[in-house]
Length: 530
Image (cartoon, rainbow, N blue to C red; front, side, top):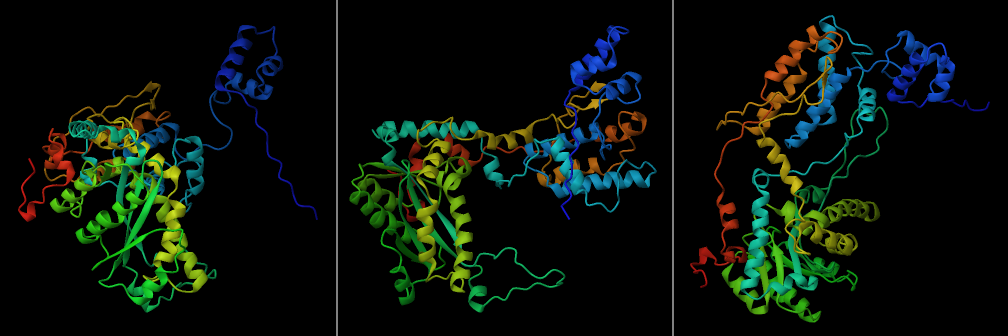
């Protein structure tokens, strides 16, 4: 029996403007032009044009059933999604669907049932149609920012760029910024030895699904191995350093390290807990990194941009590196999401590749990656995923090469600026009974010391979808008005606690740039060089 072929219905392609023009032309020349002739001219079916002229159908509308929410409610929901994203509190699909279900359920309980409302529906079909009607709604994985990172101002970042240029000019080092072979970025990242396996394939109908974990895997589940990476502005990867969480290198680890292909250069360090320490960092910079620079005939002095970390902040290290022609310049505190090339463009593909490589190792060798086999998996992956294109793009996006203060993506700081605004646009652009609404939230919120921005936002924003939306805003404004009035009376803005400029920010804008060079070491009783 031949398969059934589903014939899709074809729809006429005309706009609302074409329909208005066709109606106007027919009425202006009534008795001269027929409906069929006008419809043929504007490519509108004669039956449709006749129904519009008789006003048996609304002039504006789409074929098919009515949507679950009215157009005004959908626009209100769209503005709420936009406002939440601007305030760095984006909503999820599940949150929106729960809100819509709560609205429609309460309307049904209050004898105002909506068209096409099914109490037990998952609303997945509605969500698909809603995103088709508003394609600007997309899925994104949010970038988590701490409170300190969100407090950074664009003016302070630009001042940091100016301070770097001033310091280098005073020390006759400004020419380094024009040479991409003398600009480096250094940072460390951690790798989980036993990453999660992800979703598995049980038999349909099984109530329980367990995974057997060996004692070794359970022991290593929370262990990480640190890797210190250094990249150059022209796309070159300096041999990375693996820091093992142990005091002495065992024979098994040394044997497995020797099996790594010779074309992959790397170094090995160790610390008690596997984190980078001053001793391991000192050994890497003085011995490994400087040796690599000499062997590759790199012109000195050079600049190494790195984040603020206690392992870098040492007087003896700074003096030794200065003598070698290696100048470490600290990035502005809490700006690694703006100014760190490794974190911005390199580490993400590396971490994604590591999860896949670790699972592939389990499939191939029937064992989890351990300390002994880590180098055999991670080092080739490091050279594969840290590409020249990603490195160069990272330096460009951060503004470190070319050294431009306008290159960083300052839009990441706009979410915090939006939180400080006094106006909300949740009602902007909504057709309210023929009147286009503007923002009504103009009152400045009163700062409170006990307010939690996240809790306040949830408390203010989400109740606006849990109130009774009695009926269609357009057709029955009297019943819908109380809901809108209650939403308008709420302060959508998050109360912000007024704080003074942090000490880190004050240090960032002072002219003396020695603060960025990681000396002196206060704990050792050293004094600042004159």
